[in-house]
Image 1 (cartoon, rainbow, N blue to C red):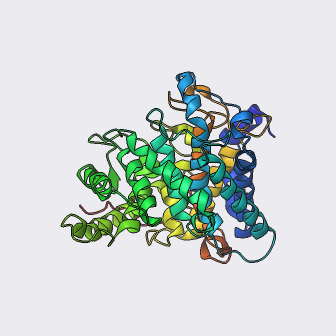
Image 2: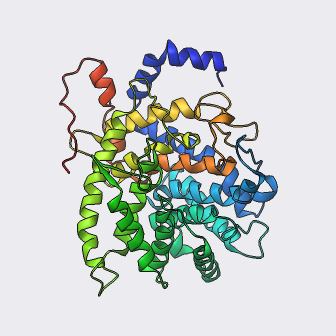
Length: 414
């Protein structure tokens, strides 16, 4: 592990070389690196939760702004956020070999973890009802179920399914804020819909229509009525809008409002492509990105939407899959290899680049940090997909700063 001085030198003096070496790696090498990162994130959380030891053994770091109440939320945060990022990989069609063996092991651990998290008799039974935070991470857990329906939901035994449904339903007592939190309730209902349970279509319709009103243009939504310059369009808003709408589309017959969902989804997809293109342009030639707005402790989770559009094969025409791979690899390397990113036991520490406790807001604790896993969604693509198999390619900022004659950027038409 490099010292902080060595790392700072890499940023200031050796950054171009570091980025170039990242871009020069083969897709197979970069995939192996991503899998290693995912393994480093997952191992301490899933192995303990699967055995009912997470609450007893996970150290909880609180940001200086946090209250002790955050300790009651942190374990569900770690589980839900980690699984939301792992889910496409758990569901992926992988060839036989060491990666598939590892994936199968984690899929089994994930199912055991769901059992422990939702069993009222388990020492690791999660808090789904106390305070306002649990609906947030129940939604990330629900998102994981949508993204890995075959590997997670369909392979759960009957008791774990029943406990999971009960846990998700129990979050309905929580009143959500008038901002992106509306989508957390909507995501819970979408998971219940997927599971063939009674679901509340009005909660979903309300969240969808509120965000239609909050659309600001050029692919970006406000986080509530006001626009905030941060990464919540990628952390939450656009990934959840896409997956909620696609899950419930055509399942709410007889409603005039639901008849408008297909047209709304069409617009949501167009906006998501544009927002993903903007995110790709924000990655500098050195593999950094602007530390703007709140929740920076979620690290490269800021690029969830870019990875999701690559996973869906819906990137903008001017963006090739391998350039996204190389750009994201550069970002992930800089963040994961920064000194003091992990403690001595392998748990994430609060920070954007290394250990920076003051980066954390009042809602940030150890479990919160595992939202970075959603930056790894393209692992759900098989190794022979173009994203992984095509030769390395420079991303937009590297090309432009190297003097390449590239096309001008264009806003999304209203």
